Length: 71
Ligand SMILES: [Zn+2]
Image (tube, rainbow, N blue to C red):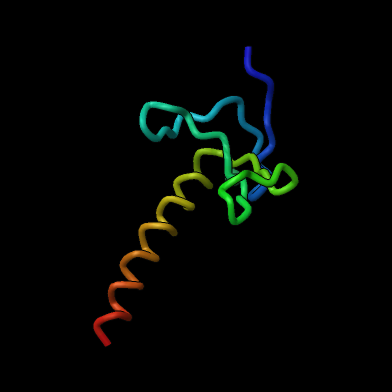
C-alpha cells in the first residue's frame, strides 16, 4: 500500500497520483539546473489537483506568449 503524501503546494494529504504523462504517473516537480539535471532540494510533491493546475498554467503561458507576440 502506498504511503500517504502531503502536497507541498496546498497541504492536501493523498495516497497516490493518477495524473500521467506518456503513461507514467507524475509525482511532482523538480527544478533543473542549466544542464537539465534536477536539483534535489527543489523537489515538490504535488497532489493531482495541483498537477492539473500546473499543467493549466503551462498551457496558458503558451497562449499568453503567442498573444503578446502579435502585439
Ligand atoms: Zn496540492
